[in-house]
Length: 293
Length: 293
Image 1 (cartoon, chains in turn brown, purple):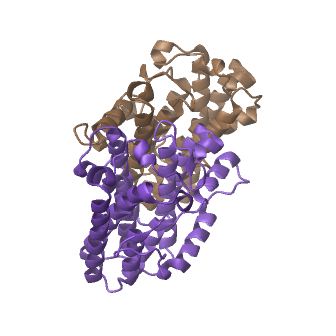
Image 2 (tube, rainbow over the protein chains, first blue to last red; image 1 turned 90 degrees about the horizontal axis):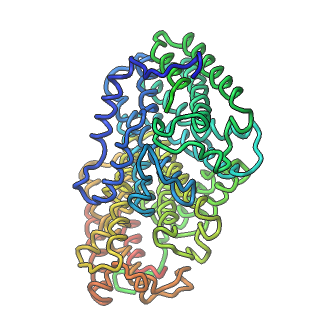
Image 3 (cartoon, helix red, strand yellow; image 1 turned 45 degrees about the vertical axis):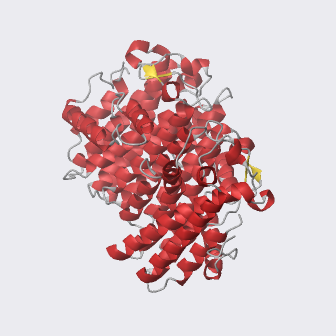
């Protein structure tokens, strides 16, 4: 897609991705335990695939900051569960009313609205339980900050309020930086916090996270215009149909691509000087810039 | 209502109730901060009054276990926020579709469904943030356990599945013990955990919490049959109209009252032998047994 990006999933994280899958599988309540329907709904949503980007970002940050041990895995799983909860609630009829997600019916289309509502709530809860299993109250605070009304929820409100309204580049930047960016920033911060990173490193990692978080969502906007529905697992053009606040809408496609590339390059520069082992972070940033789905 | 109960709010907690109100007021995001609508909706729900029973139970447990300092207050506020979140989501059209709550329109009737959904999510998140401010990952785990799919959410699912279906006393006991009981049990446990209580004390306090939790919901069922709509701030008879699983429905009113009284007496016995300062716990149990609203 661009000189800053690559289509290849980072080789440094291939093995980690399998570990994340295993941890997700292990942390979810079993389907044969009561309430079975709720547990089945949770698994339907969480095990539907996905890049597991937030867990991998946390793991990459943990390792780049010389973190040791297995403590990062419950935290990494927590981040994916929070992401899944936000998608389930965002898809509900009173929100975006989406029919398809990752090539399958959305949860409320499959299990009904009430079960989808409670499955989102259950994942939200389980995420905090997993994060607390790290025994780090600081990591719990980081998660709460990232997804609260100063973070992801502010972005969801702004996104809703902007639908069909005239929006500026600043408005779209606010929406993207909060709705998507804050949890991505939180993911790298939590990895660094659990590794015991210094304040200085944590600050640089946050700046890296902010840039790749915003770039991620700009690429999402671009893919909605020129992506392939089959590769994406969802319909394209939905942003335009729903008059969503997007970068292509306010600054056009070429400038949107330029902006994403610029953010990726900034992120790479920041992280290269901040940590001693930046390679995996650099690969991740370039993958976010160049992803096709 | 019964020899086991009293209408009087426990004198030992009058002052604490004011402190809880102050802490709730202070912990909620300001209405003039973005996203204003969401923050206004949160305040509308949380500051609508209520007995603040769960915070007071946590404080009573903390003090009965010789806890010291202010650490209990963010935890106490967290418990009220979780309770409020559960009411907001439970009132939504896809769940109970309730119009009135505490003498005012329910949140989705006032602010719309999308804002009500997100306000519930925001309170869920803020509760975990406050709980983490105690710096006790164990307290966070207790909260997550109480309200997850092994706790409150299991009760909500069972309640939903039981609507209009034939139910036994065991079914209703399961629903009540989970939907209401687990958070009440969790409230006293969290107070005890934060006070550094021994395993033995924690176990007794859990048993006390289980009994008053179940009694609380049985009294709720009874009030829905013979309570006063004005005092309750909501319509009576709604359980019967919605064919809800209740104790009066499965064992009749007299036996329901007997059951509630028995649970209160058991709770009083357990707590009197378990802690050195049981007085406030005893008053609380009797208030739960005799409340009129």
